[in-house]
Amino acid sequence: MDVSLTDHHFSEQAGFYRTTAQLAAAICSRRAGKTRGGNESDVELAQKTQHGRFLYINETRAEAKRLAWIGARGDGMASIVRQRRLNAICNEADLTIHFPEIDSWIYLVGVDDERAITKALGLPYHRVRWDEAQKIPRKFTPTILETLLPTLLDYGGQLLLTGTADRKMSGLFYEVTRSDLEQRRPGWEVHHWTLLANPYWGRPKLISGQWFVVWRYDDKVHSGPHAEDEIAEAVRVCRFEQGVLGLQKLLGGPAVAPLDSPIMRRQAEGEWTREDSNFVYAVNKVPEWKITYAPPRYRPDGFVDIPAALADLPGGKDAWRDYVFALGVDLGFEDPFAVVLWAWHGHDPKLYEVASWKRSHLDSDDQAGVIRAIREHVAVSVVDADAGGVGKQVVRGWSKEFVTRYNLPILEADKQHKLAAIQTYNADILRGLVQFRLGGMLLEEMKELQWATIVDGSGRMIEDPTMDNHCCDASLYSHRRTFQFRWTPEQKKHKPGTVEALAREEAELEEDYLDDLDDRSYFH
Image (cartoon, one colour):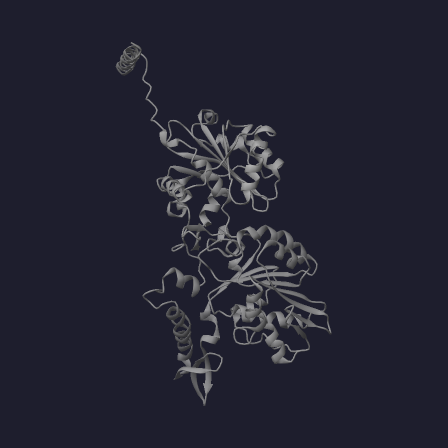
């Protein structure tokens, strides 16, 4: 048995791959040694675990083969087995490694949809290592947690996530490793290191009795000789020059990628940053206090508590009776069914989110039940529902059914000129005229939803298809139906008998008299 596969790991690398935590994540810079370290650790554990079951996951099978089977420099798991001549069978067709003496297996897979995730994660494992975890779409999070976590119970197994910060800032990896510690998903042990910790980019070496700094796999000399008390600083300089500045050069140099630029902060420092993220909605450009007014209200069963939410509207407990309401719906089954309820008042220029909510796998009866449950509390004259994409068949096929069978007034949402509608919506957000629920499903989606880096066939910008937009769409549909912009200031009431009250009464009588004269001239 070869027990030296991980002896050379540097402290940060060793600390992560030797953790006993069941849920752990490592957010690193590029070229920090996270994949190589994981490959070596998996092989070492697999070759000494009786009936071991180890799973490596990447976005695609091709990525799994390139990074973890072969490796960047022949340091993939199959490469390690062959180089070390370990007693294992490598099956390249299936991307599996089997240690027959102890019946221990390593499986490498790519997963790009929920079916593949369910298939891959359905078995119990000693360790699941998900590489490039920043690519996991947010919509996969429930499937991953619901399918995988129970399987860790069998062996007391681990789920390890490794990745680098990206501009999407969305999904399970972001939730676990985000910079604001109080907002992180609880229960995870989080590690962080960069390429400056990786000896590949610089390490001391004694050559002919003198200290030199070398780097790369072939001990290329960077500087030296150095005095012993200078070698630590010389190593730091080497790692910075060869690693950080080398990465900067590849990204376009200082003019394109300054050291404090968002791309360098992500790629070289492993830091989440929103600075150049291309968000669809403008909520990240406005202080949170300016666009929020209350927390979300939920019942014990998880559905929105409409009466409690209505009581939050400005004006007091029963003030909501003077408000007008609009309901937007985004239909879906695999993708979540989402609803957003808006409220506005004739004397207030602001639009208020009463509630936002979404859930997957609701059939038409369930969806109608949700709409009816909201309309039992507030008068919503028309419900705007998504009639495009997958929802098109549902809404257009069921719109009459919703009216006749469910007695619900469903109107197919207007999805033309969506970009213009978003711009109008954003203008209201920037002026603080839209008030969201702090921590609600709608605002959380808006904080993350970004434009895709590609455009559609017509050259138009499209929303990133890997990110949730269901509450956003529902809110956009109904935003078009709101009329808070027609508000008028409430007239100040004067005490009866005062000069002001008499003057106002005189003006109203004069206005009525002139209106009466106009009516007579029209009919005669």
